[in-house]
Length: 412
Image (cartoon, rainbow, N blue to C red; front, side, top):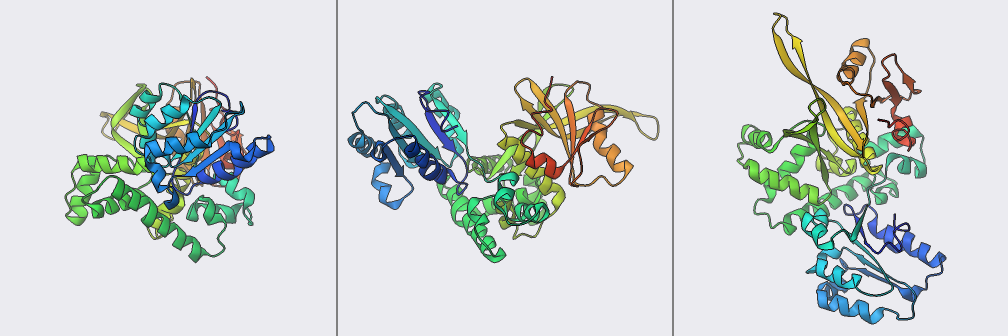
């Protein structure tokens, strides 16, 4: 994406959570690529705006003066790379000003999704090109790990995919690193950036979300949980704000509930997934390591990293109870995966040891009356197979390690 965007006239906006590799991507990988392509070193202007030495450059006018002084007017392209641009006051105006310069390719990064809020998008008027950076996927992690697939999987779902974690040998170092990153970077940023008057409430909320990944919830239900468990009153409106702050920091993502038959979103409940399972583990002191929910979270992340939009599906059906009375029930489809007009339905099933479990996972899929593909991903390392109803069962490793495991199945 960085390379493909050269010459498109847009600001290339690299986003993602802290410590997920944005700076390395820009200052090492992309920098070296430019040099290999014959770009001269002095035609690459790089600034890390979260560096103490760059503090004065967070002033918009000072930054603009600095960049203009270092530009070369020899007809060759100047590459401007600004890391953590959201730390600059009035950064939107700064970027719009830089876009007016001749022979300039502009790359910026940010760790706060407010950097790409509707207001900013409006200001850019289609002149911004977002490039999202995620923690390492399982396939990327496995490629450079030293163990087999099973040991790599256990390490991955325990310590996550932040690149620095992979370089640490001992479990203790990984644990300490993740706890420090969460407490001193993510949590501290959220509290300070949003001027929270109740930091303890935010800490508790993060723990609640971490312990209930893959569970449907809403701010009102979470508020009631605080009251019943800890006798702590936090309004649902405050919880809604706190959840948004967590999303802004790229700590979690929200997946909306979608009525498959009614073809509409249901606003009453939603699910939250952590963008990195190592951070989630650090929040819970690595106590809750249930593979069922963790596997679901990792599948969600994998789908998002591949560029898909992912919702939680609901299929409503009518059934008769034991007394013969008709009642409406809702069956859940873990993921409704969309790519434009194409779609695929995916269930995450850690194990399907019995026919009852197989029927349970297939039931909501069989109640969907359309021609889109239906997939069940199981934790076992099995070969792909298709049953008489057209439902595809695929092993977890096959799904995660084959980048085409979803795209090859998408069809209308």
